[in-house]
Length: 353
Image (tube, rainbow, N blue to C red):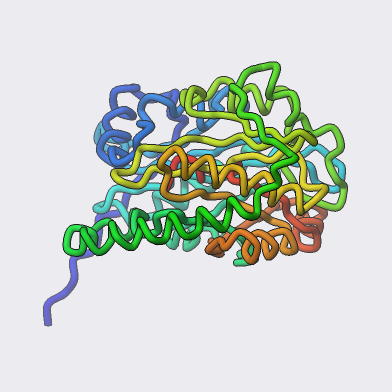
């Protein structure tokens, strides 16, 4: 009987990414995240909002002069029952294959969990395996919408398109033109939608002055919007759609996926009238067809609005896994019983497929 070799026990240390040689961090990002259009080695200080947590984030493990493990936080202020709480989305957990199963991710997670009061993630299987050990609660009560104009251009179908290229093109052509007529017929021509540049003046309509005490949500104030959009390395790709009755959305034009140009509807300014939200989305769909985009994405927490969009605008809805945790028992109790209000601007949806 052949005995399995035991992996040599590691002495695992963790540190802030600011405490190591920046070339080592850059090499890790290039090796692990080279598929990203917006390269992490160029914008990590922005996406992880490093000044917010005094440069204690992201956290890495370094062994033999090489970064072998990494995870970042996207920190923000959370509205929890009317109280301003420090929270963060967990993102970009990765451990190099030969160091997996040896406690690296666990050590990094433990260090990050000391930095904020409420922990949130739309995590994958690997990260959830770690989070489960600390009592995180998961749910699939989530609503990520796709509105297709050229469904065969979705990245997951690109492999098949090499074999059925003509069939895919024909299907897309018929689908796009048929449903374009449907959206045009639904258009409210009296309530015209403007397209505005993203700047300090136009973004003011998104200030959230009346955060609901009944919802767990991001506090969208001047500082948040300045960091999240105005200082984004992608700010030239954002535009604002605004109706005459002041319903507005920040939209990102994404052309980073080969043959899959699409729009991400990142942020709505209000959800008071569901019909008016649907009217705004409908206008964005029409604009996207005229400008050769294949599909749109948006995230809607409200179940009633989500169903309305699904049936009125013919969206396909996915339910990604969402997890949360707080070591503060009072906060955790509130998180367990209250409803969440997320949008696509939350977490790292904008930078992944």
